[in-house]
Figure 1 (cartoon, rainbow, N blue to C red):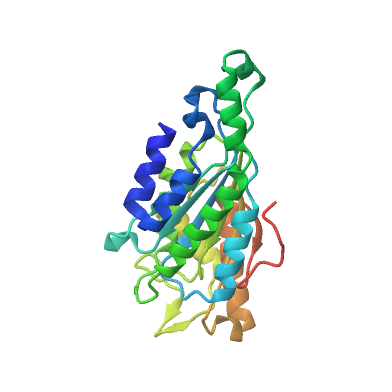
Figure 2: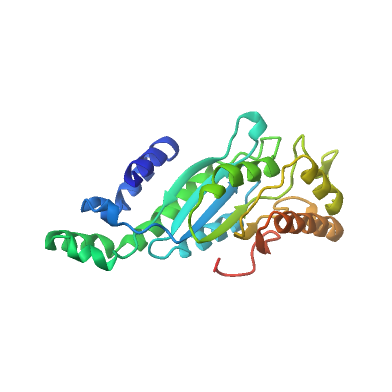
Length: 273
């Protein structure tokens, strides 16, 4: 099942030069026909990338570095894009990478010596191949962003993500990295007036979000944000920037998420751990 899902993801959403990378990080368990022995991921990192934000090389480089450094053996990374749900641009998973974890001790009783040797040869460079695939995949995603999309439906997209993806995750530890300018501009709410960013009344905005039942459940996930106000004039006004940051802190807190840091626009930390 895992092998097929990877092929589907890459064929549908990733350029041909990335398809070869999918084969390069094929599960070693699949290769030796021992898929049933593959341990499920205990940690999952979701990377949500806003396709409407005007990204600069600085944010792109930080996202790529943080994500490629994050996984250990057996960890799962899922990269998801979002933009404007109302315009038919639903959230889309474009990349899934999971370097294998070591086999359980019980596997040695079932595997033939040839399987053991083949697994060890495959396993030795799984992490390196995964990091390469992650960097290439993220670069591809950022190259295909489109800031000309007028609507930025962050609230609806995060709700869709939480309901359709996050709620079905079985990992005991979940981390979410959201790359977005965090400047909502939709029929639900807008952080703009006549083309300019405005100061946000966080309590009033949260009351409305709860009223229309658009507050998702983040299930205690650790959350990082990169890109707040990127390439905009938001940071020229301390009060405006702080009001937007304060709103999102309230949003994640009330949504049962643990906001670790919100980059304005980049994170100050060097890892997601």
